[in-house]
Length: 118
Image (cartoon, rainbow, N blue to C red; front, side):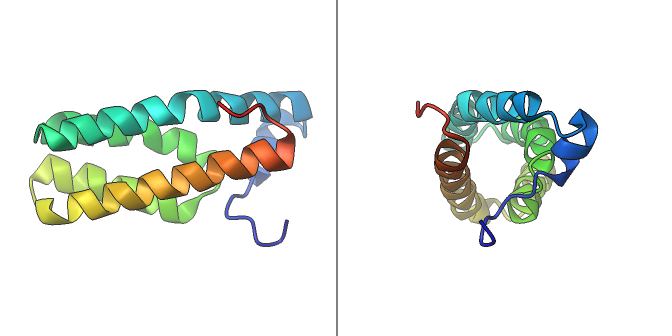
């Protein structure tokens, strides 16, 4: 597990190492993240940048709990660029990176914690 891209230190700390709580949080992420990504893609496709910015903003805390710094950084960048209507041409690639990272995370959680796949 040394090569994992997530760090559950924060979740362990706030839960007093409660494995049931941690798994519940991972399952919540697994169940909600695909819908968030789908909304973000829809907003990008429709050029609804304010809505895209808000959706990215809402997703950041769930990602930060998982200690995934690169994914968190990409979401902050999407949020800021969409909100400020800057670097809009980079948004599709950034969202694609977010999709890939979320997919990898979900696969890792399913494997590492025996979660049911969606």
